[in-house]
Image 1 (cartoon, rainbow, N blue to C red):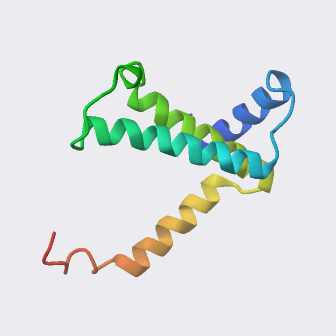
Image 2: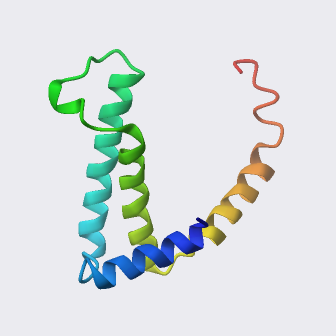
Length: 107
């Protein structure tokens, strides 16, 4: 699935199953919640914290998909074409960082 197709599919789902988008500020709050849930799984799986019983049913891929879902909703609501935005962002990073990481003695 392309990013463009994902934006269209999420929009169609929202309009048919979800009834309507939550407002942008509500979705921003939901995005923060979802990032927190992703963070919780990451620090337990890759960090020093141990899993709680309530965390064991959460899957990393599903938590990432939740973050992506809400980000796509926000993009749709605000008129952002994520394909174009990502392409521009990659170009910006390439120009800015083309030698930066190669010359980093820490890497």
